[in-house]
Image (cartoon, rainbow, N blue to C red; front, side):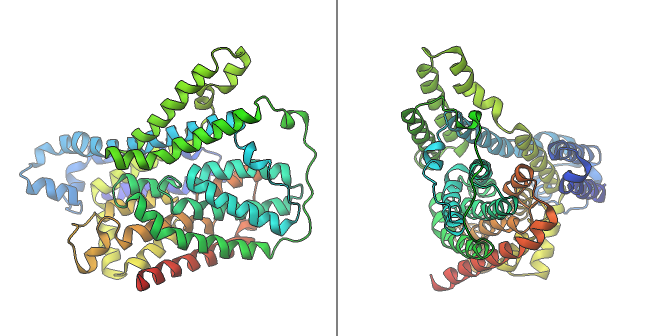
Length: 458
């Protein structure tokens, strides 16, 4: 049964990776493998945990637990423990996605996109890349990718140009999200789990991420030339149902709500999802009061309820399912076995994280980071030697944030931003592999070397 759990997980991931072939939504597969893995563990828990691979189970036995209590241990102790951690991530995502959707409903992003007027392909590439990089740090890489690609459809006509720009957006969005505590789901997970603090992850990962973005954008710029041709917009795309003042105000409030989350956590010491929900509640109160005298049509378009209906619920359910599956593997001991193998065979935190980053281009980085958090635990603050890398803000966790956040760019299916770009622009997998993968890989290695030099010098 121990191996059966792993087989279910691997086969399920195969279906997720080849979603474009089997046409089954990855959220459905993730929920399936999450529930099945826990079911196998619950039905065969004694034989699985009796192998002794699970550190949680071994700790339970050392505290005087008996084998008769195994069902209670799985269904109440471990499942509820992991559910609380997973829920904090899910609520954070729902709050953030709703805030961003609300800003978009008010056409707040037009304040930024209306300033983009350059028609030189190379210059426009650099403008979009830098804009994507910093927007991703505030809004998250998935949302930024969707917003920027929507803008690019209004700026570029040629398919090849759009695909090059879209590939660059994926790389820049992932690089921009890696160094921000609210910019990427994997960094959010490490921040919420207390592996890193907001100030440290920014200071330690921002330079490697910038190097990644600059190197990649330079290489992408070699593929572009001439001037861009803008498509003719239809009436629906040029319709403006909010004023410039309303757009600026809502964009400012939305960004302020997102940026206040790290401050809320620092001041109150409460989990970040509460700060995100607090920001959402303020925007909800403001918009409801603002819309009380507006038309019924405006109320349908501009309320928080309209934004909630527009958020990507399948993505949220995907995270729920996959994090549940990883939690089951952690409880059973699979992750402890993997951690032991990496320690015995690789024995280097930088090599381990580079491997995690490269693997994340094949397997989604969310479960990889969840697996790493399960495999390795936060060491005591006074730890020395090798274990000092695993204290809060240790080099292992900071480098993991960089590698997991940017390694997924190597393949189009390796990150949420890449999957979004593939769906919106219909980018061919093999085209990306030939044209963009090597660029993403060079940028990834350049940023990794920058991180290592930082460690040596400072």
